[in-house]
Image (cartoon, rainbow, N blue to C red; front, side, top):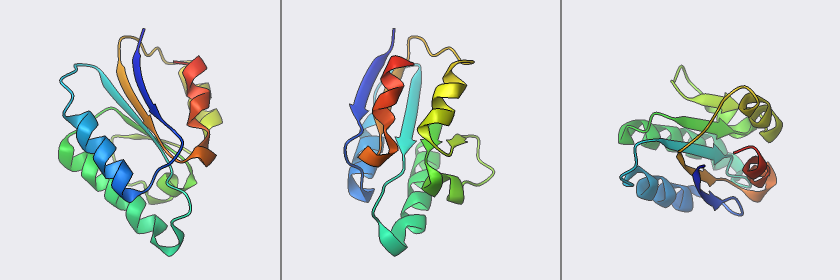
Length: 120
């Protein structure tokens, strides 16, 4: 009952920026953005994860879930949901109905976001 765009194999700052820009331009009413950590960024990791949150805030996206320790480390008092790992998201979905949404799922392969497909 949802339309899902899955890009859970690779994520880096430029691919994340492009995906968020494209998703924000979709003319859909119910949008959900689920983003997993960008892995293997080294010393730039914290700054790059902060930039993603800033970009989403600037573009006015409201329904956003972040998955992974890197995003959790840089969360602020934002309106978004933060999960330390994929199992926490799956647990959340047992109590939350997501129906008739357009969903973008993007993150590095190591976050295992593909596990969400059975729950959505």
